[in-house]
Image (cartoon, rainbow, N blue to C red; front, side):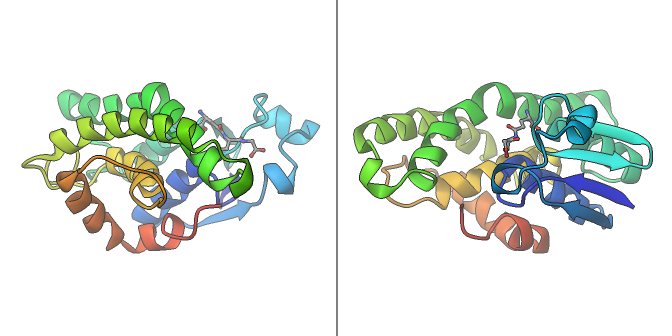
Length: 208
Ligand SMILES: N[C@@H](CCC(=O)N[C@@H](CS)C(=O)NCC(=O)O)C(=O)O
């Protein structure tokens, strides 16, 4: 059975778990990272020299980088579905959101998430956090505009792009205490994601 290494409060692990559920793919998950350790041990480093989570083992095939893992799972176990479409333009359109999440969105999300969720209240620099939230908000306005007239990020079919951005959006829309721009299309899309059992199971739980 597919093995997934990583703690459930990591957004990059959550994306992979959500993907597995959309594919109805059974897996065994092993806690690793932060308080669980394991990811700096030699056995883990031999699978993933970055010492980061997630890592998967599918038989003797080992893979790290969450977006690459999702692409692999969708190709291997869901090739006929919409998660990772085969037509070049449709696939490239999904890919750009996956790349954008790594290059642009996650770096903007990280200071807000760590500051608001993993920093004690009395140590929070709220002015800096609001500035970081404003920078992230500008990115979400791009997504909001793109969603106009679309049910999902790439049209009428749910894809890996919705998983990746949906997991990060939970941290943006679902986080109180900071001012955010109005994003009506994003809100409408996010509400549709909240109806999905995999979202409720892996993404909705409290941020930690
Ligand atoms: N680009 C990598 C990033 C992996 C990453 O940053 N993982 C974090 C958790 S989200 C990690 O391993 N943190 C160290 C730890 O949990 O001990 C991916 O998408 O898989």
